[in-house]
Length: 367
Ligand SMILES: [Zn+2]
Ligand SMILES: [Zn+2]
Image 1 (cartoon, rainbow, N blue to C red):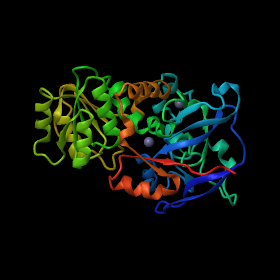
Image 2: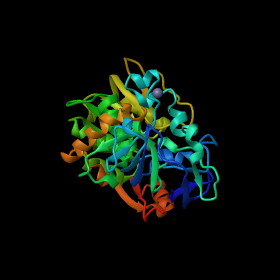
Image 3: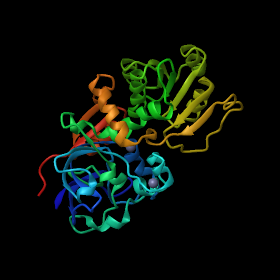
């Protein structure tokens, strides 16, 4: 089957929308999904800085949502016409997968970031038969169709706005999951969020939904305005004595801090803003060593990396759609849609901070 996809052929190249070929259908544990929309996540764009570790040419995109149009068999638990949100890939067999922590799967980086499941690589090529990288994050959803492991496809109610749901599989899942799963925050708890992008704003929304008092730090006034609309107290990143201000706003120190910026200064500020036993979660990949100031972790404070919001996607995504229905998780307000052909414009808008969450919508019919 032939269909259009956005292909990245060089780390510094623009995306090119071109015809690709799928030479065989889904395997026994897979489904073929017609993509209704796919969010653009920072990790897609980080491929450009992967120093060759994420193979190209590749079809990126890992926040897809769509309709199942074929299944590899009854064991997938899915049927034609099912609406699904696609999330990250995991093996299902390693110790952490068995322990309901698939984001820490032993093969997470291989399956999602650095090449995918090689056994199925040859079935996906460009129109001239040239190799494409095995699927990205188990999806490669910047395309009209994606073949995905059924394990990563979460069935959702067809009444939901399917084309907007894809970011619930990664970006929004990460922010909300950090608050609800990693921190287990609840009424009366306090949280400071560093960076009010898609992940940070999802964390703010989840905090508000859970009765958690939140403070949001960002350098863009319009992002702070969004954070305030979703229930956070806004605080400009350049404000003097950031830790002191957060401590005053949180009755002596925040119980939780979530950093989405990877800024060493903000991370140290966040640690100083924590109360004793407070927990700082990092979601962004650090580009350099992180100097910690003396005493930063004293009195039970801790710091950990959080991947994919500690989520089991099949459990968290339905929680988030339930909160959306109740008016408590208005993630759709962060989304701007673009036709798939405008993928480069979406990337530029994302990098310039003009859009919080671009979602690419495939157009036209397959041939
Ligand atoms: Zn695993
Ligand atoms: Zn992502």
